[in-house]
Length: 65
Image 1: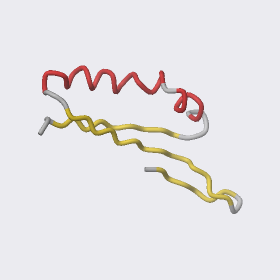
Image 2: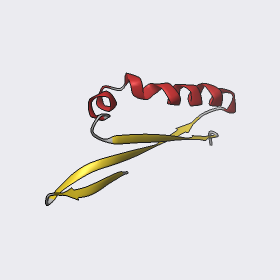
Image 3: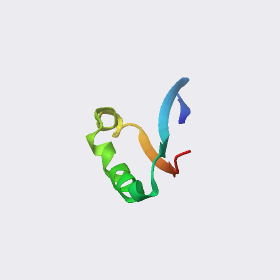
Image 4: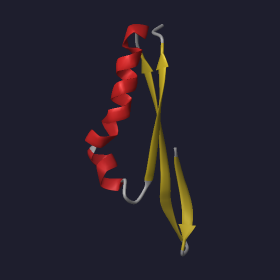
């Protein structure tokens, strides 16, 4: 989901919120949460836009089935 604002009659992306949905065994929840906390720094897109656009993420961990 993104949020835009009008700046001098131009729409500009100001914020992006990424919702990640991961299905896995409960035994892997802690690993998934740890990786979620680290992955942005290794993402070239995030690293390219972070100075100009606020990016937030959330992880929804779901049981299989």
